[in-house]
Image (cartoon, rainbow, N blue to C red; front, top):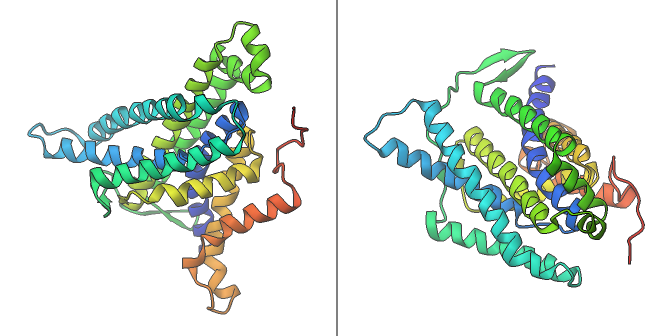
Length: 309
């Protein structure tokens, strides 16, 4: 029972991160019909920038409280990634909106490779250690061992998701985003600045990815230039599982994928008689992706639609 409780807790924590990243995929796809495969690398850049800011603050002569350092790192890394996302959209994707769908897909992969190599040139190929600024004293809750960092990840994710829901459903920008997703040409005729809405969508998605990267680095105590690749693929799988283009689906898909992956890591060795261990937990994300694409391509909450000419 203790193992089950621990793995469920780990799954919720992991799923909260996947949900934040998956929202970036699903928002862009909902408006442009584009899979932004560079989104995982934007998440990685958020983690690397935050660690660089924290190291700079700790090396300075001014002693700041730990939470002030963390706040400053977020204040710098999130806007930096928002700007990065808007720049990617403006330079790499906007000129290809009317191109065949294969062109922006290949461009997205190219941008991903560029960002990964830029990170390696700036920070090197090795791991960047996240400073020990957060309390890590474990405590037991419902038979699961947790730390304040893990609890904070879930709580912050829940608050951010609630704020995003309010933004989409209760603000003028949110109405413009929904209108653009429904029909960009009609929205433009109704006075919506489609370019600005798309840029804002990339900025919001990149900001969420940056926050998720910060959480991953804080949880595992390190970050590296390669972390965005696997995070991006898993978050994309979560978005497909929930229904690509559906915001609620991205959240549900992220949580489900995190729980499935954690339960697999906890019980895979026992189920296979020790042939496969917890180090094979990554296969579950792709098994889920293949299963969903075969049996329900629209995802759990997605709708089957006919592509417009």
